[in-house]
Image (tube, rainbow, N blue to C red; front, side):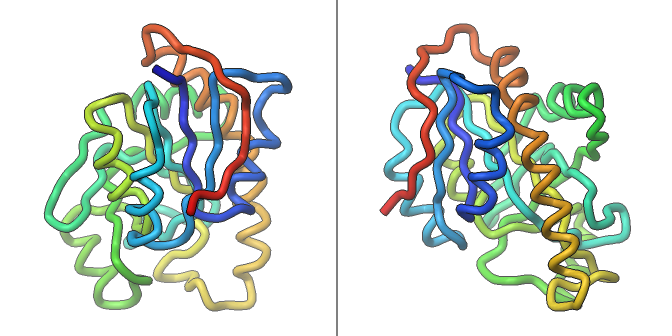
Length: 206
């Protein structure tokens, strides 16, 4: 069984994570899945055998509890009527806090499309903290193994995605992503009894 698999939708996300990882690290693999649930589901078929999985990248807040730049660690991932639990979310949040990246823990929803306005308010009323478009299908593929879902917030209802400040928020979020890698490695070490190392790589899946 292999070690930690880190999934990111965008190449820019994967590169930020990879550059933050310790040099000559083994046992950790970074892949690019593509944007949206359809591409994520296709990527899930190629994930292979992994001991733990982390889905990491940018996300959007649905309520007022998160601001741009905040980090959300999913306590559960909701996708098309199913709920995938992340029982080690608190452990990961503690590791992030020790690294100077305080994170909030709460439900993450994977949507089929970009969520705006009334739909965000509806999700917030159901207790969700943030939304993305990839984690759900990948969470299914985790198949009971340790799963982490981490989203750095780029947009909120008060700071929409299509606004002049989006670029600055995205650059700041990318810097935060670079800091996540070592924390995810420590999280994996704490949740995987044994890790079979393999070379660090960044891949794009078909």
